[in-house]
Image (tube, rainbow, N blue to C red; front, side, top):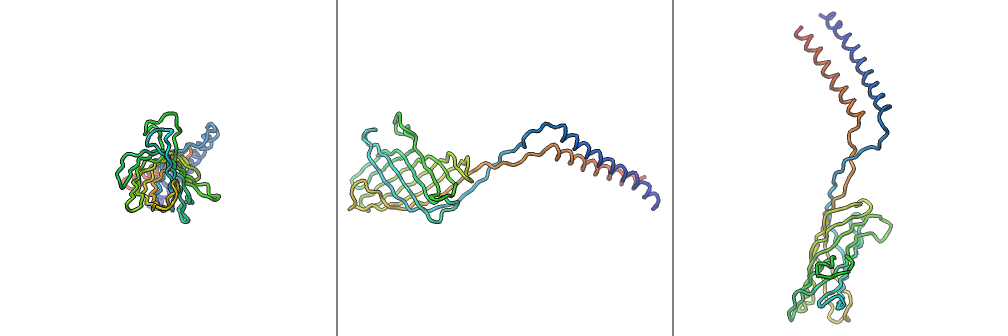
Length: 242
């Protein structure tokens, strides 16, 4: 019995050696003959979710030159502990007074002038960045509302920023930011003075990530492994039943 097992092991070993040589030769020939093309990559998405609370300054300037009830709004923010180095932001939008009572005013804001029927005006936007050397940035366009309550001297607002790109780890970013903001009016401040407040932003950011695709060498090695496994199984079955 031992002699018979040794007898069939010898050709199997020789076959495996030959198969290994053939696979190696095939791989070498394939690499020599294959055109030198760049490595191909598949694109996957990486999702990053995080919150940042900023101290803000909100300014609202009338733009009667653009139309009745039209404004330009600017919000700037600063956070010392913002994730990914996004310690600052600046948001620019057009605004329109859409509701007014004796004690309150409600405004709609958009980075797109077409939202208010404005022509020949530049689309505005948001940028979230680092005041130092950190290269990370996120860009977007805002769409939101805010209500000024003169009875309790507050400004309450909220909305969504659609992401349009980025830099650093957020290169080619997409996704959105949702936010709520609360400001406190100072009735003694001169008209046009920025209003101090706080805003909490929830970032939902997707960035593309390159994943290498399988190469011809990987495929050949896989074929060799499969062939070796089939050969060993065939010899084992032959020995068992033969």
